[in-house]
Length: 199
Image 1 (cartoon, rainbow, N blue to C red):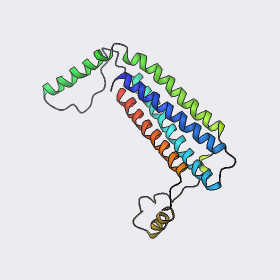
Image 2 (cartoon, rainbow, N blue to C red):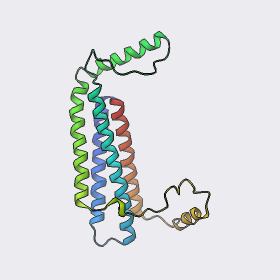
Image 3 (cartoon, rainbow, N blue to C red):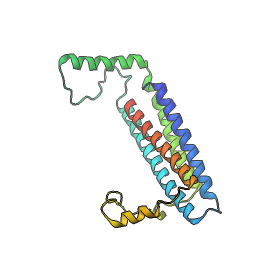
């Protein structure tokens, strides 16, 4: 994945996060929202803000790794562990790392690290802005099921009862919110993996 692909992926993840955050903010600020719907949106809000926190932490980790092991320093070797294989395989890996530096240009990480730092700050500002607009303390949100219930789903009869209770028709607004949240989560995970590979 090239530098341009990583930037496009990060841009798309930011756009999805902003769109999801604004939709959740509008929904939670609505005073006419039913109690059950409010509880569901609060659960989505907590899950979404937790994903943003994880994304910010992963981006900060990638930034720290990029600063600790820059690709533009020609005499500073990257840390390599577990080198295995014959001499030709090791030489091929060394050449591919060297060609990666040449293909990327001399200032690949020099230009990308400040942009990544700016994006980390933007994610942090977005988290702060969301928390200022809607006050949903994480500890006040009630879970749908007991901790670890998904691990025991086929073992107990309580799991079967809770599944039967939720087997009714799906509310389109909840399905849309869940779909948007899932898309943002997938993009955030993809972005974190891309940033980690960049480092």
